[in-house]
Length: 174
Image (tube, rainbow, N blue to C red; front, top):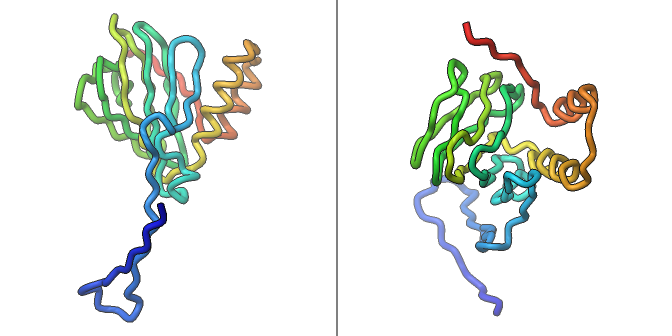
């Protein structure tokens, strides 16, 4: 059913008073998913391709005792985490700490971070990338590698990460 709507803009104070019907609804179950091997599923809730690059929002579901992303940085975007369920162990730049339901971690550009599930229960969290560089391509590429069973060389991993503005770092416990 097509619905036509008219909009009146009040109080904007300029000659360019317009409103648009341009919202995008991604219904539950309609978002693309990518399996990151047997232990994690990523749902592309609002990828950068949907938000005109303003941000990317992804849901990450991890099985108990599964690894996620090792310590790394991004140079061109920030990454934030919001825990929906379970406990996620996150590297906050200084230490690995447990984050539970409702906890939030914001990591600006060049901030060292990582995540994993050290708990005996599944964990789910949202990841927000801003601006929304096409992070969905990173997850698609990882899923394809996992599905194919292909083993990458260290040089191939470095190249993959570099293409997607991810630079792995070594973290030492001093």
